[in-house]
Length: 261
Image (cartoon, helix red, strand yellow):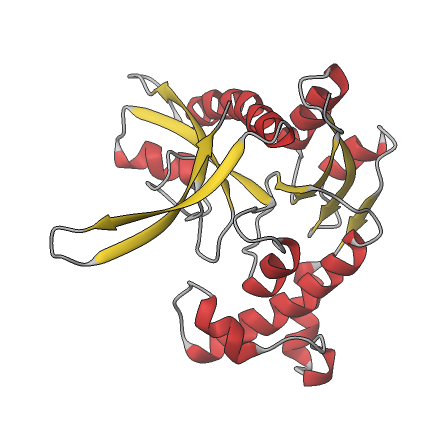
């Protein structure tokens, strides 16, 4: 029997996926335990679900940090180890230069606060369970400290690489797709672009509404996320770099996840 893994969780809302993960740990479906639940939103209802199980919780109020920074953008608030030029070269996000600067600087302040809170509860895997904030290289590189061993997992409400972004089920439904689904993947520097671990799909039928699509998707999320975490706990997820030659002769590389026996 392997040593149970320590799981940290970040949420923004109801924490339904967090609930599924905690239940899987309690039932033995995951050889692990949740050691903290943090939120960017003081009113995140999922925090209470963790507290009811005796799990430590904390809040880093992103909205408050952003408001405060815009009112007084004092560079002294930035963490001492923040290098904006370095982060810009690796952050795969487009946008106006000034807006990108504000984004990166406010994220660095918030992410430094997250890291400080998380330091009190060492963890092996960080799961984003409905955490509605993009993470920057400043944060990612301080969690992913071993090459080819990512430690930040996310669940997305669409069959990636289709419909990245914040409204996966809505985008799937409005596009007229007949198949919807969810994806668990590791985080990288892009938006929902990290290596895929697992996916589940469901049929979208005549008469389905956006609400029924979301209901079908959530039911699969609560199955898929614990399953992917179980594979991580069993050390069965292997990240490898694959190389392809495209039709135009260009060579591209991408990290992919293999499930090993």
